[in-house]
Length: 80
Image 1: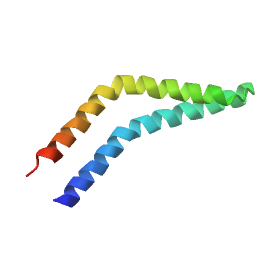
Image 2: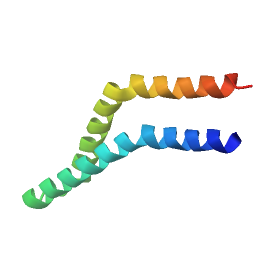
Image 3: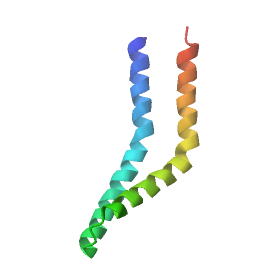
Image 4: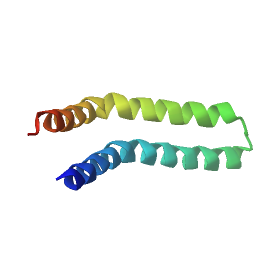
């Protein structure tokens, strides 16, 4: 029973964090390619682009992520 809940918690953590990590990675690679082609090597550009992309993703998916997390927490707190 405990192992099943631990596996479910790890799966939820992976499901909630994977979209954010993928967006940050893809935007980071795209900005790196853009910086390499334009020879503009300002670290603020890369950080700002990743920050804005992750913020937009969290604004779009945040409510559903919070709902999934709260449903899991409710199940864990109400289990016998």
